[in-house]
Image (tube, helix red, strand yellow):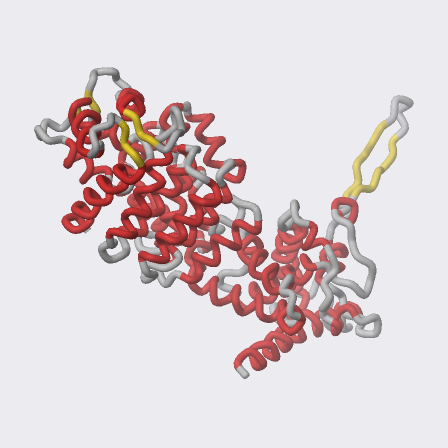
Amino acid sequence: MAAYKARNLYTHFVHEMIVEPGTKASAGSQADDHPLNPNPDSNWGAFFKDNDMLLQIDKDCRRLCPDLFFFQKATEYPCKEIIHADSRVETLRKRVEHCVLHSETLKVDRFGKSNMIASRRKTSEEYSLLPDGQEAHWEVVERILFIYAKLNPGQGYVQGMNEILGPIYYTFASDPRNEWKEFAEADSFFCFTNLMAEIRDIFIKTLDLDAVCGIGSMMASFTSKLKEKDEFLYNRIKELDLKPQYYAFRWLTLLLSQEFPLPDVLRIWDSLFADDKRFDFLICICCAMLMILRDEIINEDFPTVMKLVQLTSTLACVKMVSMCMCITTSLHASSECCITCVRATVCVYGCENVMQLVIFSCLVVFAIGQHHHLNNHELQQLVDPGFQSLDINPKDGLLEHDELSKLFDMRDTDGNGNLSREEFGAHTGLDFLFKDPLFDHFDTDHNGVLSKDEFVEKPFAEMNQNGDSEVSRHEFDHFYTQLLHHINQHHG
């Protein structure tokens, strides 16, 4: 019943804001009302004001998801009241085409002859238009945004709203069930309106520098979270003077809708909207996106890093990101669900690629921070991928002393024979999940650095229970499961 009333209400909005004005525009203006009428109540004043907004909406909607042909296709359920031949309603698309100004250029040929050459923005050459009687999906999105802007004059339309609405409308309009597809426009309008009620402060320019709300506040929370989870990376970004306005502004404002292919965006949004604290989740994902580029950010210069953070869709493990979203599907979800998602991801993609482990690790640490203590079985499932990442030379199912020693040498970036806390935490893998407690555990002499004896010799001897100079998966799992269980109980 609620859906029925909402859909009827939207039909009323369409009739009042598009059909009636469009009918009047087609019929011509009244004798006492004309474009030069100075009367503030003149319909032409509102018409010109709406046109300024409509031109921007039209431009943005025509180029919505350019890599996806869906929005250029005809919808199966157009607004019949508008496209019907007998209705004589001027559509928003035609209204835009009519209001584009002609311009003329004075051209003089080599004989001195002058000619006036007329020019006009030809949108129809850039985008193929459908014949009369059909509507493209982008035209439906345009209508939704126009109605929303008319109903919210204090905010109006702001660039980027089309990127928020696009995935919502696509989900409804591509539903295999006709009963949902038929009302995709109305349902998308109300879903978009409800979402904008939560994020509208982000689109209000006067709140950009507000400390409590607005995009400035979200970027501050983002940098704070990054510092909390990876201070070394945070300091490197600060050293590069890579301000969040350069990249995180778009990430947060558009809810990552422009950073990944649409299927991955939908997967991220599934988890985002299922979470009561969805914007905490969003901030965590943005931090994870930087962590996946950790090595490049630490080692490269400003121009290279700037390019990386602005072209995140090119990351080879973008699908890894979307699948790992379910790790933090809800801050109230069970840890068992969290671990299951991790295991599924590891099974599909493997852990050979260290960069893939970054996103796995950083998201799990966010999840762990939100859940109750993990049991031994869950901890063992977290430990197992760590063994796979270490057993590489040779990959024989056994961890040898040399493999652990090489890990130490790799982390000892200054070559002084010790691992500082920064060096220990600068690499990913199992220890990233509990890096500080693990560092303190291995630092038996409490001098603030780890020697090879503390990090390699003693742990290897403890793991090698049968004394055969090789650590099996079972021995590794047993050692780290017990160790992480102890840390989990005492550090939470």
